[in-house]
Length: 369
Ligand code: PLP
Image 1: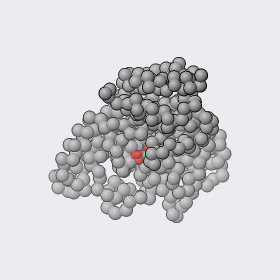
Image 2: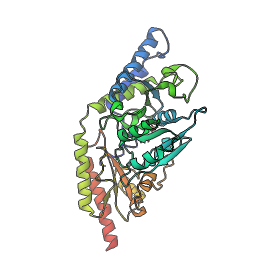
Image 3: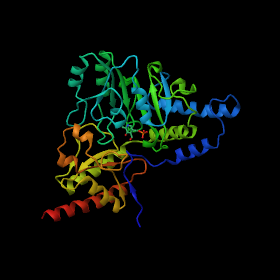
Image 4: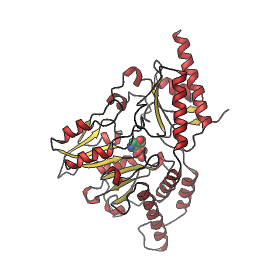
């Protein structure tokens, strides 16, 4: 039996050896970071070292506060939580992750055919004066398309709105600098980088502007009550350190080879938002006439794991809200799969995927003949 090929890193990336080692080491530490004795101080030192790693990875320097969370869903929800005393509209691009779109007070802003926020429409909407926050992801989890965050942040700030960035898929995959982006908060998640599931971080430029989701102890600068998940946090820092040290050229090369071969095998195949600036590791590709679920199942049987758009919690394949917002015709959207590469991906993995996908495309052609 050939080994399985895992090409679903955007859903979750396998645990890196360095992250596993850091997790296991942290689990051996008995202390609570809030305790004053030596065991507590050792746990605290581990958490603070991890905080410095997160700060460096997003160019935050000494500015603002890093809050460790249970993942990016919690980080997004915390950043976007409305104050009962000062409710305002949260404008979010129509292609945001559900953890953003599900927040109270969210109104969606249109995107272009590549899924990039329409800046003219944003400017016009901001002129109405009631937008308190703008939520814009740095890069999309289904297509990899990179958003014009700095330009959008300038417009939002001119209208006195604060800007939250979901950088889950971008951190460790492209340069991320909160100063360059001009954002006021930023969310990231460990398991997309080869860290443990259930750990993330939120950077807040002005921590006092945020009402904590969880009340209780004074942990995390009083922004997130509850004893810190020290093992998860150590695993996050180790995964982030490894991801930041990795050159991205290899992934870009693999993705380009994949896309070029796909178009050579099936000239009517579509690489979604092919001409837009995109992350190195994600490609969304359509094989017209073959539903995404059929492709995913056939590839799975051939030993290759990919997904039909985002990993959906229900396990069902539904029409992608991202492709819908981009105006992608249903005949293409329904036949689009997401292939996402990561730290385990090799040239041989891409070859296996191409063989299996090529066989599917061949069956389609024979059926049509
Ligand atoms: N934002 C984006 C863009 C994502 O891809 C994900 C992962 O599915 C999340 C947020 C949620 O992250 P987590 O699984 O850490 O809650």
